[in-house]
Structures are given as C-alpha cells and as structure tokens.
Length: 361
Picture (cartoon, rainbow, N blue to C red):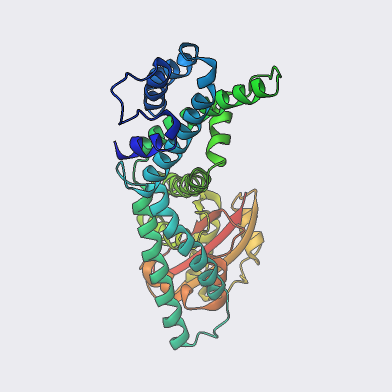
C-alpha cells in the first residue's frame, strides 16, 4: 500500500481534491484505478488498465502516460526488493555470487601455489596443505549454496520483466502518437524482450550476471557428480582405484579443475608397471622390461589409444590416502595431479606399489 501511495504522489494533478465535495471527473477516477492495476502482478489486470485509455478524454492522456511511467518505477522498485531479499524467500543467486567471487580469487591464487617447486621442504608443504584445506572449505560452502532452488525467485522476476515489457510498449505508443508516427511493434521473441528489459535496470542486470555464475557453477558441480558416478560404476576398477579418484577429483574441483575419468587401458598400463617393479625389483619410470621402457611404450602395449600426459610412482603403503599425500608433498608429482590438460586417469595399486598415469582423450 505504501508503494502504491508513493507512486500516486507522482501524479499530483490527478489526485482527488480534499477541499471539495464534488465528485472527481470520471477520467481522474479511471486514471487512479488504471495506475493501481498497472502495478498488479496479474497480467490480466494490467492489460485491462492499458485498454482503459479509451475511457478517458484527450485532456487526460498526459496523465495516463504519467501513470505508465509511475507503474514502470513501481515494478523496478519491486524488482529491487525481490533481489535484495526484502520480499520473497531470498536471492540464492546473490548469496552464491558473493562466495563465488572469493572462490575465484582463491582458486587462482592456490592453484599457482600448487605449481611452485618447494623442493619438498616440510614447512612449505604444510603451508600448502593448509591453503588447500581452506580452499576446500570455501568450495564446499559454494556447493551448499548452489543446491538452493531459485525457481520461486525466477518466477517472480519473470513476472516483473513481463510487466516492464508491456509498460515500455505502451509508452512507445505514446511516443509515436506524439510525433505523429506509426511505429513498428517489437518483433523479437518475448523472452528476448524480457531479457532486454532486465538488462535496462541495474538490479536486473546484476540478477542476470549472478544467475549466469550460479548456473555455470551448478553445471561444474553436475559434471563432477557425473564423473564420480562413472568412476564408481567402473566394473573393472577396485576400491583403491575408486577411492583415490574420488580424493583427487574433489581437490581438483576445489581448484576449479575438471574431474579425471578412470580409464581401463591406462589403468592396465599402470598396474602392469607396478607389478613389474615388484617382480623385477626396480623403482623407476624407465623399465628394464622389454617393450615397456617408457610410459608411452607401456600405454601403447596396454591398448591405450589416446595420449598419455604424466606418470607418478609410489612405494610404501597400500593406502590410497598415503599415496596421495606422498605425491601431494612431492613437487613434480603434484604438478601432474593438478595439471589442466588431462581428463583421463589410470591407477595401478599393487600391494605397497602405486603407479598413476594421466592422459587426454
């Protein structure tokens, strides 16, 4: 009601006199009703208000135009209230947007730290581990906020956008009448018109930007969930391979890197190398086994058709977390785990020996 009264104050010439008992001219009464209906969230009421222009005299046409302008301001204020959380159930886009701004900055900073050679100095590795854990907590906050349902907000904003499109179209008709021109109606699809109406307001433009970031981050989360599901459903993989892939992909996701998919042939090459190191008695990337000298040779012999990109080896524990921690604390091995290029992962845990291979399809 306060907003409606505020809007009416924009039309002092149309206000009813408080000093006379004479009834208001019909045109003024129609204008006040029209303004009230233009501010409605009901499209039918708004359209009835636009049609009421034929009920008023020509002298009241400027007042009708003022009513349209006042209604436009009303809906813009309503949009601001929706997006600020003053009305409705809050704005999940804005809430996540604030976290994503911080997350993007921290991702870039921490990923750069991950690719520094610390020469395995324990103090610096502990610092790096702390940085990674802080980034993971921030990422998990973002994931939690991205699970919010923005459907109600989108529906409300869409209604406001439609009202603004209608009112701008009516105002355009007044402009054309003023200049004696017969203008063309906007031929763009209504969704494009609503998008343009939102972009014309500061609140609407901010909403669209925050919504885009929300959608992009949710797609990122969906891609991770799909990769994890695929990895867990690999019938050929054992629990150690799946657990390691989950651990690595979660930390890659925190830094903004895409998940790695477990690949059977690449894992076969990694497993064979772990077995060879045990049976032949060596610990190295170069193998004395005929035909398996290099990682490339081993990948090709295992039937891997794509390009291998890196290899890590570890000896000392059957635990996937022990292997991960050892590689995280070793600069060259960490670089391979957090490289941007690969999208495939091969793992070969055999007893206390581990071989990791990355590749790209």
